Length: 534
Image (cartoon, rainbow, N blue to C red; front, side):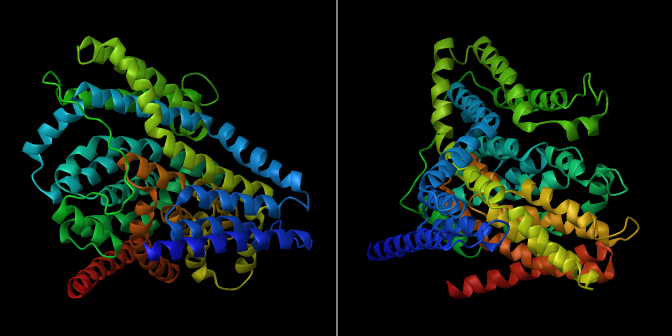
């Protein structure tokens, strides 16, 4: 209790000092646009979140600091920055994603109310008989849903939660496995919303965007080695750091959270009429119609990209396509559940507010995180500052080391801003201008940019994918961040070594083999050290 009080006092002092510093900088007329000050608001928010383990107030302090730095000595402008530039633009810009989250919440509530989740749990009891099997099934399911990371996080979480709970897998471990498969698999899948976004940014390099994306896949060390790392900790039982504490507590005491703060479990009802197909069919319907919606919005069925699958994915807007598909899927799922006599119409409608309420924490965090990004990027010009840094590095005659430098810059930018898409949107044009088309370092540098964006996104507590992974696993968000951070940093360090080697060797197979050996060796060492410490 005393430690908590001391931490609270320290956090309050840090928050007041950060706001005071912002006021002082503004009063002195120091330039804050496109300088290091543009990165201060997210650094303050992330630092407070890790210190206090409370994300709402931390994000708000970061927003206030950014609003003051960009207010030009005007109090009313500072307030306007918080309300208009931050919160209102965050809600209007991500309203489609909010709608998608609410609809997913309703579908999950319907599946639980119908007894389909309990039916899947009964099936899993006879087919998945160990903790290793439960974690491996979660990993495989996550890899198979490669269309979109939001969709991946929430779908895998809702399906696998009863299975991992039954085998005493901590919620922190579940959310890590979900997060470790969501963005990385999207980043190496040629047909995904992420591939489409990367392809659109990469046009103008002399190759088609999707061609460049595919050539960069073998060098995406962070994404590929994350899979090796996850499989390693599953089969070797080599958890370390704070994750080990959560896992041991779940195994020995049946406590899935290990902290006083809990996420209220979703109600799961038993229904003797329910079958496993009642869970699988709604998910299949959701996947198929959401893919159809993404293609429709991208112009695949009559537009500039008619019958052009890759072009339509590149032209689509996930904030429109996902809600478009999920609304149709929800209607079909309601009809299906009623036709199967698993729920009545009244019970189906009762799931609407339940689904919304289940997503309120994720929506709140996402709103504030997006507000912070808007202020840091749009108001203070963090993108311009990073571009300046990258061009100064490019001017130096260190071409073979540039992939490693690009990886670190992308990590830091994604960590500070909480957005991988924003990161590679900023860096891809810069990276493509560093190397000629016939230079193999173009693909390695591009991979370093994409890998760093995913890595920083994984580490950041204000990342939307990290928030979605917490929501999908119904895990306390700060628990997910604090347990995932040591794992993500470990893979990042190994990936950095691989990018240094790749700059000179320029052979993906050799570099990946070295990375895999380093990953397994690191896990063996950490397992031995953890056992010795215990």
